Amino acid sequence: MSSQARPRVLYIVYWGAAEPLGQSLVLPAVRRLADLGADLTLVTFEKPADLAREDEITRIRKDFNRNNVRWIPLRYHKQPKVPATGYDVIHGMARGIVSTLTDKPDLVHARTFIGGLMGSAVAALTKAKLIYHNEGFYPDEQVDGGIWKAESAPHRIARYLEQRMYARADGIISMSHRGRQVIEALPAVQRRGTPVIVVPSCVDLNHFKRDESTARARQGPLRFVYIGSVGGRYVLDQAGRFVALASREIGAANLRVLTRQDPALVASMLRQGGLKDDAWSTEAVSHSAMPRMLADHDAGLFFLSQGLSEHGCSPTKIGEYWAMGLPVVTTPNVSDTDEIIRRERVGVVVLENSAGAYRSAARELKALLEDEELAARCRRAAEDHYSLDQACDRQFDLYRDLTRDDNGRVRGKVQPQSSRALGTKTNRQEVEGQLETEVRS
Image (tube, rainbow, N blue to C red):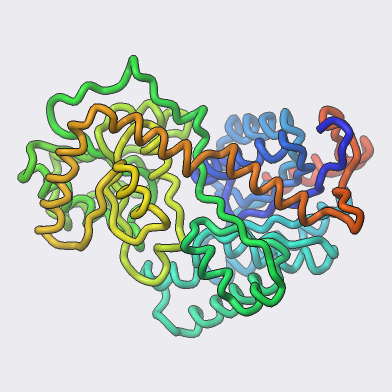
């Protein structure tokens, strides 16, 4: 795309580029969108502990520079929750507006609920088109996680704001086909004919790549693995109960939990589920080391509380399990996963939270693991449903569709991709100075 117009995109996400979610979901997608031809400015919110990892921040910045992506890392504030989040919204809006002085966007790509609130305001002020990238049905997720009560004031206010974002958006990204059906049924979306595309939490298949020469031979105890958050909606205690019952039903089994969360919380939940201390371990693992860790296991676990929101999510860990040839054991009604598992035979759905259902699922898994074609089917499922390239192609098509003028030409910056600049040398120096001040403040 050497001399074609490049859509100018302000991409706001309420995650950090240095945290696991950012490493898995933001960096690969932003790099790919830039390669496709988007002129990207990325706003992220970095946790203080991550900002303190100066070598990692430098590595990320150099990585973005290679892809001609301008990065504005803002500081994330956690406590107290409500005032801190409000501060981040205002701060993010201000910095987003400032960034337009250097590169006025054609589109604001607002990802996550808080990112959507920032993006809606910035798009209105700058007259840019808005893409709301739904990362699940956030208000209902707060209820399912026990943070808010259903129909409480926070829940109702958040749902109102969510509906406003759907109504305001010029394009919408849903994480699942089932979520897309819910969004497309909204009166405001129907009235405007707003395009809604499906982009699951995609996996960099070049990073998560199974090496048959080093694949684990199944011998000894069955090895389960669990990635990511625990507590709230993520019911690790139920996963522990499943492993405990599976070890009695089909033979010895152990569990490794790969998370950055407090080991004491992990221990408490697994003990609550009845899993003995010598049957599990936990550790924090970098994104770069994750494929190697997964390759040493037999099956991945994903247990989510049942409620209002699970059909709208898209667990990255399921795509990562499949990419590494591992079947998944999961609770029902998660995203589009039930249908994929049953159609393509790449896992087991635990139908309910009961000993009988757990034992039945364990027996089904044992039979599945004896299938020599299982790993290949899992990899194909990742390629078919979690491909980063396919997902980014759909997003870039949406960028181009929303920035076409009346003659069908894409509006944007006409500039060779290899020579993208942030304006004049003086402007670049000012921006770099702002960023250094932000990181250190």
